[in-house]
Amino acid sequence: MRQLIINNVSIISPDTKKAKYQEFKEGINLVIGDRKDGNFIGKSSLLRSIFHTLGADSKYNKSDWEKEGPYIYLLDFTYNNKSYIMMRKQELFKLFENGKMLFSVINRENLADELSKVFLDRIYLLNYEKQYSLAHPAYSYVLNYIEQTEIKLCEFKNFNSLTSFPSTYYNDLLYELVGSNNKEYNDIVLELKQKEDSINNLNEKENYLNKVLEEISKSTESELSTDDMEVLKASLNNFEKEYSVFTENANKLKKELYKAYSLKSELEVLVNEIKKSIKKNTTINNKILSDHICPTCHTDLEDSKGYFVNSNNIENYKFQLIDLEKDLGNLEREILLKKEKYELNITEMKKLEEKIFKGKNNVKDHLTYIGLRQLKNNVYQESINIQTTKLTIENSIKEIKRKITKYKKDRRTADEFYVRTLTEKAFKYSIRIPSLDKIKRISDKFRSDGNEIMLTSVTWLTSLLETKYKFNKNSTIYPLVYDNPNNANFDESNDSKIFKLIFDSLPSGGQIITSSVGFDDELFNLYQINIITLDNDKYSLLNNKDYEICSRILNNLV
Image (cartoon, rainbow, N blue to C red; front, side, top):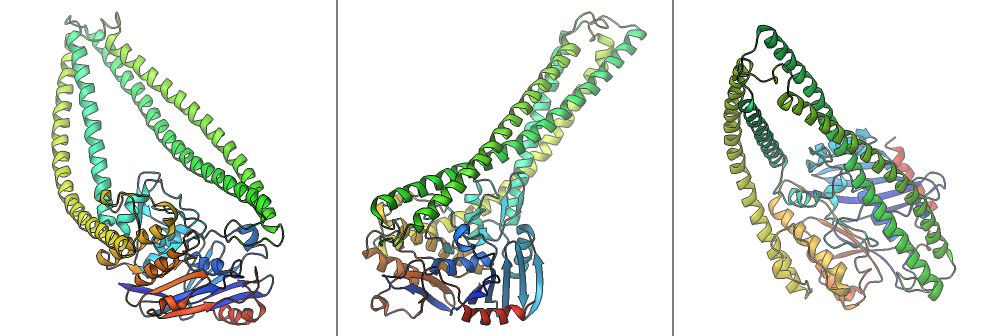
């Protein structure tokens, strides 16, 4: 497997002429601040910048973090024995190798394509159009990053903009990461679905033809004159044209409805997330007003800045919520109108069918012996063609299912390894996982016991990573960047557990970058740890001295 090692990171504020430069080493890196003044000094901002520069969208507080203007991020890393620097400014990404620019892109799709040529990792997920497409880079990093403010066991909430694909991507993504899925598997699964849909369509057509034959058998057997035959032919020809128009309209409306429903689902997800954020910030403000204590670190608040920051966030969230609810309302109205058009179209189709098959006194009931004999023969021939086509498709479905069986066998092997690894970790570190015996697959979700949610989350992620290392040997080993993993622990005894669990998960030749407020290194004397102490003032991660260093790096690139 190929290792990606972070050498250093630069965060530059061109407006204030300040920057932060920080070096890291192979192995274990720990960024700390002391327990008294260790909060709000920029540990999280520093760690967030790593995968943010590599194409994920980290959860910065935009109103606070970028109040001095948009930053330029530089990430110096080694990959497959080659040196690279990735530059990011907002949506612009540039990658350099030994000072030579390899690419410059401004959207996630192009970035995903270009990075896959370097890292050779390609994650394909089913999009809203029911096609497999290349996923954005963030999806490759979800096992390797923990955001201290978003602790969601068995969910991926550590980056923004993870709604590019339907929420059903969870299973596909996990098996892609551990190597049990690939593009060939995705393609044959999609092909199987398409062929099964074709069989269903042919069955519907066959049923329709049977109804046609049934209607023919009910019709009169009186003969038609030559003139009547011409009228009959014209009538049937007109029916075919009219029916074709209705069919095309129905298919078009179905596609439009599908896209509208997909967009509605995405908007509803965003609305729910914003409502949660409003509720969370409101709870925090209430706590601040009543106790004058920070609900996160439990320290005395020197002023009301935290309250006003949260209040501003709540107000912004409410504005966003209003806009989204307006868009959602317009979309629901659009869906209603399209449904009405679709239902009206279907009604007209049925009227046309009744007219041609059940109408009376129209060219001797439109269906008489001479005209229907040819029609009947055509229907029989079409039925034979359908049977032949179905047989061909059914044989190809059998072949596809044989291929899928092999992938399912690989999945079972990966599932067994993952469950065994998860169980062993839970036993070794005395972690309580309710209903552990019911977890049978990588995709099975489970819950945490009480105050061990972060400890359980780390156990889950590192078990998945070990499964990836075991079965996806052609994939990239990214650094473990776990921001303040003991943040949510209400039991101090879990601090030692969680860091030992993380440190023990270091792959050979790999890298861990984590952080903590305070650290008792005597408890971890068996590990070689590069301790990085941030001694800057609160909210002052960037400084004038580092600006000179970072400017030189940037000037060598542009």
